Length: 364
Image (tube, rainbow, N blue to C red):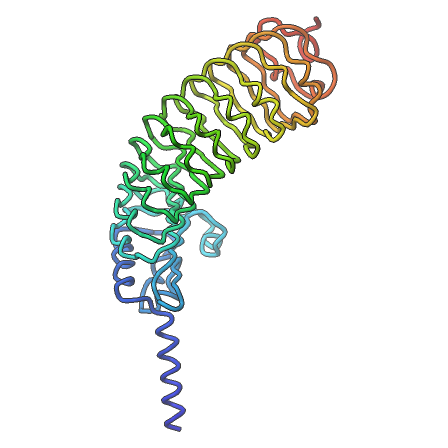
């Protein structure tokens, strides 16, 4: 009987040990919690006791070392606690630098809480194993840490929908493992680094809705894995690099609402992999290149609000598909081609040009 009790006690101690994170990690988590206020869902009510690897909401640990490896706190998700509450999460406070003491972290997600403010702790760049840094959808301000490039294992960097200012750090281009970058809807200024193309593993680069100026770096053309590039709603000027049209994987290119000038590279329109192309609200000029082909497949083709002139190119009639077309508010002239895909578009696709005519506009 005594042997059985001893074995049971030993077993319970082992189980308890597996569920408990190290005292140092627990202290860091409690310091992190102390700087935040979540008034509606009560997610931090679970952060009590020693079993921080098992019962603490959003926390995961390495089962061998008992070190905290993941913090996953999302204010918008299908998590049962959010579904049951019938509301999105809301949290105020700031990100306590004590989080940097969790030096085994691989994933740090503090996303979509709307009210978390303050700056990104600069020490976050000293967490050597960090692979995901996702703090989208808060009120964070200040600058991106200058030495962000130290995070050599980082694959996801999502700082979108905050109030982050300053320039894109030069060291960011040293993130050789980065696959997803979203800095959209902040207050970033300055230019996109000239060697941005060094991010060879990047598949998505989303920089929309900032105050970025300068030109589009030609080095972007060397990013052979890049599928989505969104530079819309900035103050980027100069011509569109011809190299962008020669990127075989690039399928979404959003350059709308900038100060781009010059002519549209014909390679952009002949690239059969391009599916969404928005160049609207710039200062592009010249004719629309007659470069479309039978394999062209555009879900969206928006060239509106520019200074384009001349006719609608006849090769646009040969495309495999055009779902949404907008050529309005230019200086185009001549007859609108007859047949597909033009017979499906309304007059709003062609309005406010110099002398376009034919269905759905006035008769030529």
